[in-house]
Length: 104
Image (cartoon, rainbow, N blue to C red):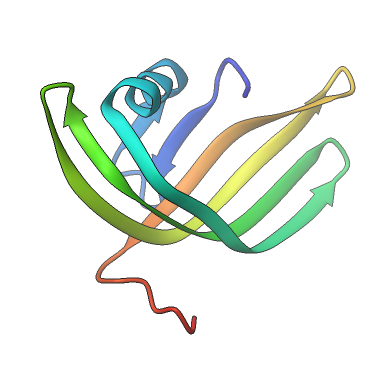
């Protein structure tokens, strides 16, 4: 993960810097299930764009009061090769409303 990594909403209505995202992930979120499907990668020299469908569920919140969540949507990860090493530099996501359709 690149030092300048950020997670963004598809419409740029919110974003989370790398340090904040990692703290949320490791302190405030307990993941029960997480997966990606329909993964498609496109490589353009030293840049790659990977799209996928995602699903996760678990509990999140403060350490003393975590509440269940279940979300799904689509993501675009942008990777950059630097000195021969690939690092994700950006994740743009859209959270879809409702329950995930098992057939889609």
